[in-house]
Length: 503
Image (cartoon, rainbow, N blue to C red):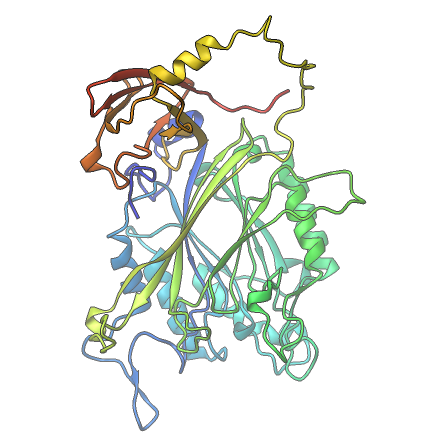
């Protein structure tokens, strides 16, 4: 997971120290999310034992638990600072008491005690409610009991408005606002609601009321905002299955509008057992108001089920997000980790040797829809009598048509705001430029920054881009000292600025 462009600073996953609070002021909000979904404790659970020919589950003598393997894997992944855990439903297979007991223990193993991975945010899945019941209250009774035991306090879910809970308890220590949204209250066997999720007007009203109240809190603008739900708010074509009908959330358009109006960055969900990432930034031509930035949707695969389709293994996500309130920009990196149960030749690994490895990652940066509001100046045609380009052309020759470029985006380092990625690019050859290759590039940006000495035999793409990345608090001038194989040298400069919203 580590490379030149994705460096993380060691940091505590426990409540913020004064040092981390200072870093927030200088470098925006940084948060790591461990995202699990569809654990499916019960007869189809992948961990904790093997189903025998007699139908019982044998659990002794080294079969790993899901929590144990997750913890072991996270020790191999570089720390991302503050961290929370989000589980987007289907912790059980059939709502049986024993299954909820196993799910509770798994949650405690991950998020309880001094070695906690961080606070837990959680929503139910369609397998966590009793879909044989015709009334809502008995349908969610088992989940209500489980949630109360998990949080060691009585939880009253009888009011439909409790299907939307906006959590502000993590603002001070973690800089995050979480919306836990239950899309499963009306899942009922033998009806149109058997497969789909639903968010009702009562739920949506409760959600918007709570979010309106949060707006008055001056801390809210600087917070990362994350929503959790189980069903798909958007059923993308790759996940539509013949004969299953519309499985996405009923009234999801209204839900997405609310999340957009209130500036949510992430929407996490599960349900299909196939991991996906995509953005929701659709705009109706009839609406004047446009959300400032897209909503990044992360669909979790199944961390624990044996019932997997589309050839996808068991997976979970490590999500790093950086939010820069002043520039209204954020960056989100999703690394999907897969469970390895076989050797490369296809033979089975011993359960004691199961492990996780990277399946894929998606690293995206988002900026406001309308970042620049000022009008552009008037232009005129080029005039040879007025516009001397000889110095510009001379610079091409002096640099052998090599030019430095910079791309600025939010940094995932908890202590820094921006990241400047620099590289050397080539302009098409011009007459008079020798046929020479770059042998080395030294990138430097002053005494507060590392120096990158990149030689042709040390870079992944020799003689091409010589890429490096600087984390920084403020604007800076970056220098590239370039040496060619014929002995020619050139000093080049490029400016990395701090992006802010035009007022």
